Amino acid sequence: MARPDKAAAVAELADQFRDSNAAVLTEYRGLTVAQLKTLRRSLGEDAQYAVVKNTLTKIAANEAGISTLDDLFNGPTAVAFITGDPVVSAKGLRDFAKDNPNLVIKGGVLDGKALSADEIKKLADLESREVLLAKLAGAFKGKQTQTAQLFKALPSKFVRTAEALRAKQAEQGGAE
Image: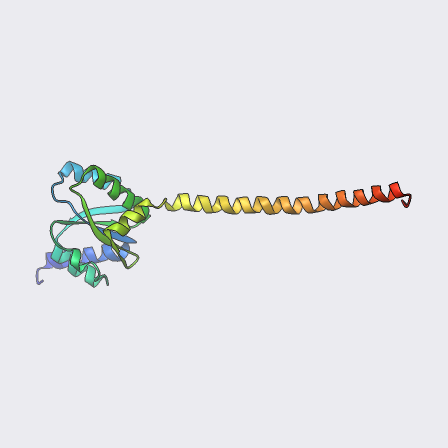
């Protein structure tokens, strides 16, 4: 790899692998340029979809410390480099692949862990990070409300019990 243009391409791809939270390898054979443009839009703002050369990308992935993808670099390959929420981009890929069967998800990597195509589809079935955080916040709020109602109920229950005791004593003639 003596050519400077290839060395620069490998360095750029290695930086993209290092800077991204996830990378998904796909086969795009049979897709038109317009379909690829639609796919890029469906991935969201935090993902970059690039058609790559297998040999250079394999070298770049190895330089970035990712050797688990070596078997996936065959046939026409494109990589979705995801810097944001991987669930959003995985949903975009899954939904696009449903409408366009020519897009084949080969596999990928998420935070250094290799993912199969099935695992990427399972990732796409998850709710987005924002939705999960909202559900968690709602659960915390619900528990706080229950706790507040419990603390509010204890003094009022004590007052009702004391009042019942006072009334019972008054009834029995032992009231003060």
